[in-house]
Figure (spheres, rainbow, N blue to C red):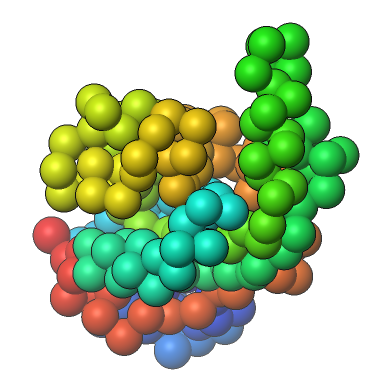
Length: 195
């Protein structure tokens, strides 16, 4: 059902959904997708994660290749922006690392150039993205992962990926305002995710 991502004001397009073509459902889109549309055979694909291409990835012009990997995997891009990150934002993002001895060099690195931040949506996107990105240390990252293919050193590991559902929610709220995330229907969603 398209409604699991609030994309059409509860106007469901799932063929077997009783709310197809209507805007009469009074509950939330999340309630709609979980209570009414599961019979449509389309799982809830509204899980979201944050992916950031770090300054070294931007400088090396890897943004397009990284985006391509997530699109080819079948995930939907719902938010994208390029920015010069402030120390304040990084302090909140890396709050668990502030006491680490490498934190000042991490700040220097992350403010050394622009960052491209994205929100991707899809089934098991957090776990799958972590696998696609690879181990934090490129020496231990498998070939075929973003870090295995593009990273040189743990301090220049090209990309960040949320490590959990809770982490993804916190990071998305930190980096994006609600109106910067788009809820839209991907034309291949039902054929990609139909069970």
